[in-house]
Picture (cartoon, rainbow over the protein chains, first blue to last red):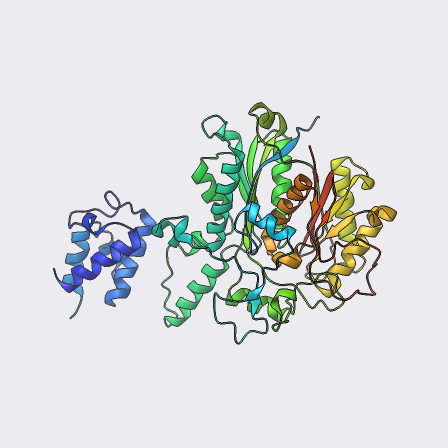
Length: 79
Length: 415
């Protein structure tokens, strides 16, 4: 697993209070991990802070699963 | 129209001298001080370096981590005492009409810690606006009653009163009146506050409202003592279950006391200083007595606002003498803030519990830390100095007054 994926997972575990085993690539923040709309906004903000990037709203709307978050960040975070 | 009667059928407390209602009462009876050096932050640079903090409170003993993170401490305290009071009342959520069950809570400030930390992170972050989406719902004072209603499914009247240090007595009076009028049968009422933060201490210090007796925190809150030098900031919460009398009787509930009346008034004088002759304080006790339909002579105990400030303590005793005349000398009077510190918007709630327990046990909690009589006060009044006094009582009155000139008074009677 990439370093980015590792960090994304630990942010999700911390913010949503879920078990590591639940954080699968297909898991949806709202349907599977118990997030509400405010939790989702907070997650995106944590990703922005951790990876020092800015995620535009129209792109943030497309990030609704663990896998989507990891792919977006792997493509957009400069090493 | 005939007003319905309202009784107290459950209590809960989280205070600087005890983390449950029985422990709080034990602290009151034994004259325990809750004051100590501040542990929440390094107070070294502050003029006042002590407060009455809640001790040994760990949010994760009560909430899961994700839940706890979304709540300011004042909301965590609210939910903890609501749960204690609900358990104590033995109310069956499946047997009551939840549309007639309300939550009326009091908080003077709300989520001060949350406000402080979010603004701090904004400023530290080059003032780029990146606020947490939970900032507003964590901070607003009314979120406490919102959370309580969600937890128990109470769908009746729901709001938070804000009148500084009178807030939770206003909440109790509102709950009393809505039950009297038939808008609800049951209410979770009370108040919570968590203002022992840099912003809270700094703000009250700037007003010169706080005691600065850093070399002896436990004797700093000394209402009616000649050398009092300001109040000691406290934090915590209390909840009371208020219930329509027949509703409580029908389910065989334990009834602690009846709430027979409440009074409200304003000084209309100054934003922070009390009226020098205690005009608003006089009126509010008269209003409460009229609402309760009792004579002044029927009152046995007054739990005073008595914050240990130079002016406030004098004007309140003047008001008591005006209202009660010669009977003032038969009263037991005490300021339990000498032990708990001043819980601001939660003061009325914890002092209501003190009154209910005093009725129940026939013990008047003391005004501790009395060393020297103040010639500006009438020393013939029984201010219950230093030691609890045993006395069978029937009626107890509690005063709370807030910055802004808000005055409230509420009366409990043994049943």
